[in-house]
Image (cartoon, rainbow, N blue to C red; front, side, top):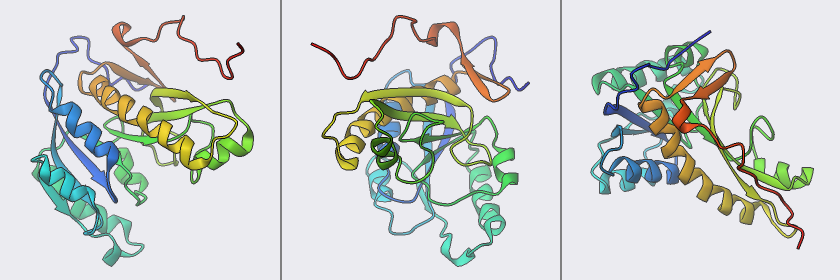
Length: 230
């Protein structure tokens, strides 16, 4: 059993790094949320493995320090890349990591080092439709509800303990693009809230699942039915 909860659940400004490879729309949502009074985490660093990532300019415009550690020169040497990455995280005293479209796989050693302290978001209701093209997978399967999942990172892709999920109805005329746009809105809502839970020690991992403190529990009356019959 692994428990990362804290009985006091004191709100502390936790130091967070966001890792990106592209435009970083979820990064923007996290930065904006963290700027609000009372948010228990501070986005102190954005790291990209690509020098041309548009999200770097967005982070800089919001006053967040940025750093580029290009992964391409390392090729398949993931450990070599992670050595530089870890050095940067240590230098900035990073406590928590949020992945925001970071398109590089980690070694199991790096993931284990950050176990319980690194979050990712995936645009499906995991464990359904992991990996690439989740919206296409969802439409092909004919599901009536889809959504997004914030989860802890483990060595297996899109398989870590689930922290938070949000759902949307799937319309008959949806395309992967239209569904993706609605799910993205959900992503921007749940990722900051999941970070809030982690930063306030309000989430615990037990085996392969997560539980949250009583104040963050879902209501048993919360429902989403799709399609709606009039």
